[in-house]
Image (cartoon, rainbow, N blue to C red; front, side, top):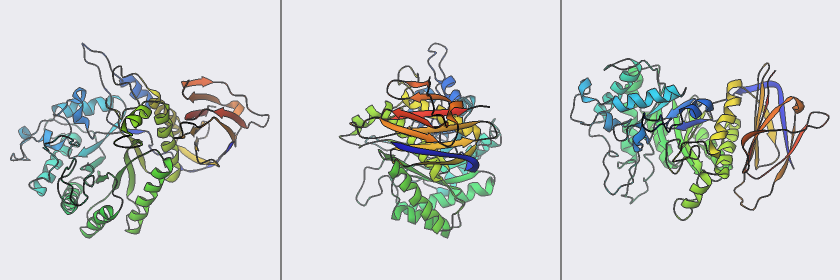
Length: 440
């Protein structure tokens, strides 16, 4: 029996954007009307990171987002609007806004798994690359080159430069340069962009996993070069919610120890992954099923309670990591519904105290003047696990309505009778998400 308690008497902060994603909606063509825009709108996704968008033909493929695709000839003049190709990225960002989501813009390149690498190499001129990025921002925020005034806030410099940074590695996938070259590119670009646009947030390094001397070197370089670091982004693929939280706590400690106490900690890639080789097929099977959905929901609750600033699921584009939408029909899978559930807490806004005495059961609560919501998640990676009793106290839950996501139900309304004192008791199947809401 898991004992959960809520205290709605005061708030302990705000509900932060834990239901963000990588990549936005698919809007159907006139001759192929398949799309998921309405579902994305309903989920209330606050931010969409556009990393790896250029893998997706529906977004514009290799004409989209990446600096090397927007500015295809590096010998060109950064001041010359005709040197830029914004068309596909314009459409993609517009579609993202149609879903009600802001763009979290990754400057750099998609990951490259092929035998030949094209755009993951250090730019030939770091200062020129920074000026190119400047004009991309001017296009989307200041109307340059027939552009827009979208006021995009988050601008991230590159992706996973640490991925293959081990000594002796030559099969690079994201960054073929040295750590020191990335540190230099970051400092030059971040300082230039912040000088041009004081109102934006600049950060990186979209760390793959090297929360060791690689991250230490990055933080040291930023500090020594007096470069801005509005947010520190990092990634986590795991089967353990506890491990995700431990990585967040380590990153936070390193930032605080270096004096970056106001720097946001953003986990902007995560998903259920048991392994990258023999266990990868099993991982994909879970991602698109109820276990992956419960892992996602557990991370949302735990990261909210642990003080993470933003959480972004990888990935909402059609790919093996998309547990939200069916690859062929784009209709919701089990993994879509945690985003809908968490959005109910996000809309209320006030984070209230909650506790669980069971390490496999997560709970987060939000309460305003009239509305209240509680999200309960029973996540386990044990395929032999049994159902678990849940006791929820702290309010009169006879006045709540309930929706349940488990292996049998797709976030459907259920009836639960509470005890005479309003305490709720329910038996949850392994990997279940329960949303309790009260609207006055």
